Image (cartoon, rainbow, N blue to C red; front, side, top):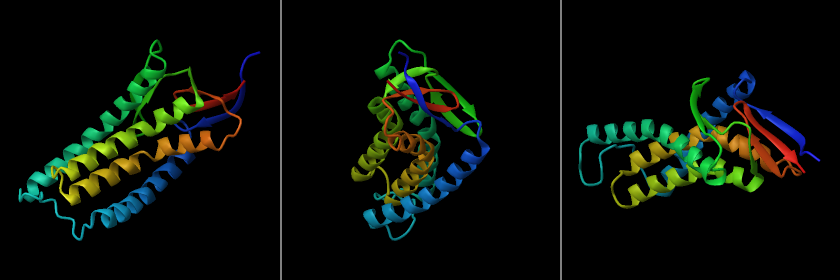
Length: 184
């Protein structure tokens, strides 16, 4: 008996969903700024590094990390897709103003897809935190870069949330539009 489709979650061709995800990402950005500012004890948004390097260096570093985090984020998704289904192709693209990675029509276990969805947020946040902890990033750069990247993970959080709120789904098929959730 073939798996039964329980829910189809469409994102890429759904302007209403994209609008609400963009609005949510602004809220996530502001919330992360507030939380990270409190956690780091940041009292000002100086981009000067802790060892006294100038503002321009911190600004270039922050911009480079923000821009660089987008393709690295998608490469992490791609690596996770390959980790769980090495024989299946991974495609990268740009649509609706978003970079994306997909392994179209590839089926994953529920837990695998949760890992695929959260891995970029967890790994890049850890890298930024380590950079801050080692003094390579000023508190201001760490807070800004982490908040921007975290807000960019809103779509991933949406898909993972929809999956976790679907009690019966045991399998997830990645599609170029979103995900399909199946049960045995």
